[in-house]
Image (cartoon, rainbow, N blue to C red; front, side, top):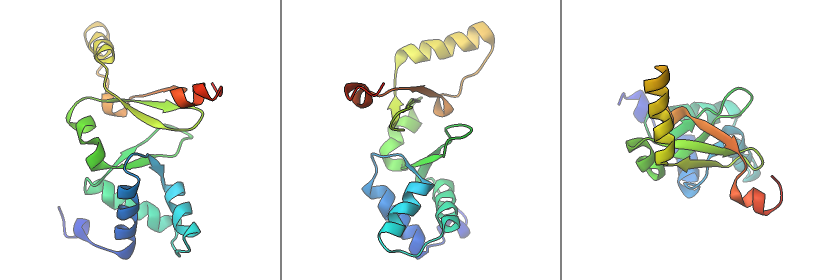
Length: 142
């Protein structure tokens, strides 16, 4: 890790603490910015992005790019250690935006089929399946 990677600022610590407190959630830069503004902190969106990028570079946060038109989301990385040691797919609820880690042998079968049958290597860490989560379905939203 470079000296720059270890650079500590007030915002780095504040954002890291907020991410730890929300370790079960996938947060966007915008939601993090909104939280700090609502708490009365004077922080700019550029600062939020810069600190998130630094924390991702240091391996303290995971970043999920959900594709064109969707905001990337971030999570505290120690919570998802199992996800990154093993192959893990993700499901994204189109109603509430929740991102769910999915360990499923059936999807590994599809991954193998894509490789052997189509010479295509699927990246399970960047694969997001879209649909509606159980909570939204129970509410009659999907």
